[in-house]
Amino acid sequence: MYIRQTDLFWGLSQNVVNRVMGIAERVAFAQGDVLFLSGDAARHLFILAQGEVKIAMDESQKKVYTGSRVGEAFGWGSLIDRDTYGGTAICATPVVVLQLDRDRLLKLLDNDMQSGYLFFRHLSRVLGGRLIQAYHQMTDNDVGGNHG
Image 1 (cartoon, rainbow, N blue to C red):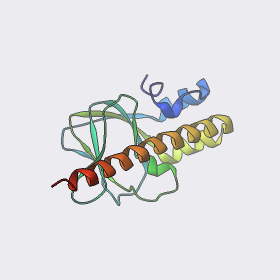
Image 2: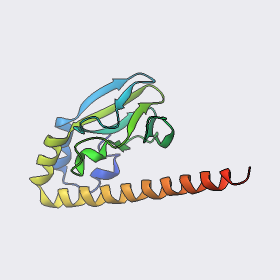
Image 3: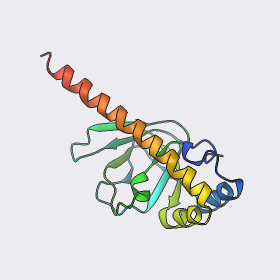
Image 4: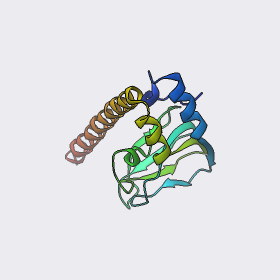
C-alpha cells in the first residue's frame, strides 16, 4: 500500500513492486527516536507510513527538511554509493516506516533494468526537489538575518 504512494516506485513493474513489499519491514518509532544518525552505516531506505520525520545535517540538530507525507522516502544516501548517512533523521511524532534493506533493494532493481532505471530517475527528481527546497530555505534565512 505505502510503496504505491511512494514517488520512487511509480511505473515500476508489478512484479518488482510486489518483491519490494516482500522485503519491506514495518517498524514503529516513538517521538524523539532516531531513524539514523549522520555518520551511521547507510544500510536502509525508509518509506514513511505515518508521522513526521525531521532531517538535520549537523550536531546542532537544526532542521533542514521535514517529511510528513505518506510514502515519502528517507535514507536515500544508502542508494547512491554512500557508506554513511549524511544527515540525522529524528521522529518529530510517533512514526511508522517501511524499512528496506539497501542490498536487497538494489539487487531487485538490478534484476529488472527498466524498473531500476525508472526508480533512479524518480530518485533524481526527488533529490532535485529537496535540493531546491533546501536552497530556498537557506536563502530565506540569509535574507531574514540581514534585517536585524
